Length: 94
Image (cartoon, rainbow, N blue to C red):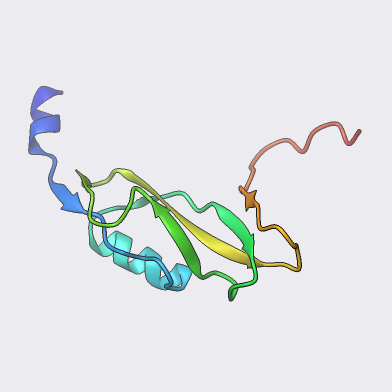
């Protein structure tokens, strides 16, 4: 296990802000970052435009680490709020 951690490559996180989600995925995967967790945010921007990302651009992280682009969903809301994708149960409906 120790040799596994030592052999991991460190990569710089690319800037994917203001890019389409598809282009952001390509850039992240080309950098060796394949664990991509998409968290949508409501906004007036074009749908699937990345507003921000975690970790931030330029940070050095291990290849294969998890990254999270925050693309938009088109909405008419007056106050944009974070809207994460949830998988699994939908609750009780109350």
